[in-house]
Image: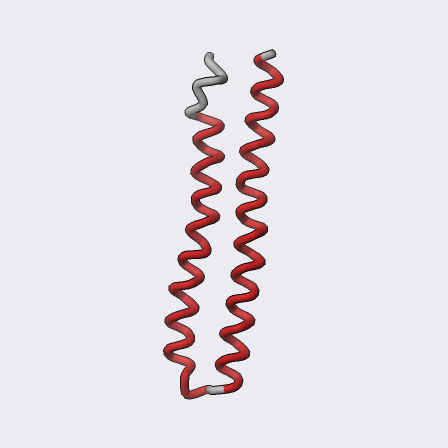
Length: 83
């Protein structure tokens, strides 16, 4: 039974990072695409658009880091696995 638990925890850890990275990658691509089209339409506003885009990308990237933290907790601090 312990081997099954370890396998499920490894699967959950991989899925948490993978799904978080997939979602954040899609969000980042959409945000950068919107910023590029905004700068193309109004080049004078490029400074404000760039600053806002960088802040937004940092917030999106934090979601991927949360997925990584969850996977590390599952792998290294899981009391159900018991050694």
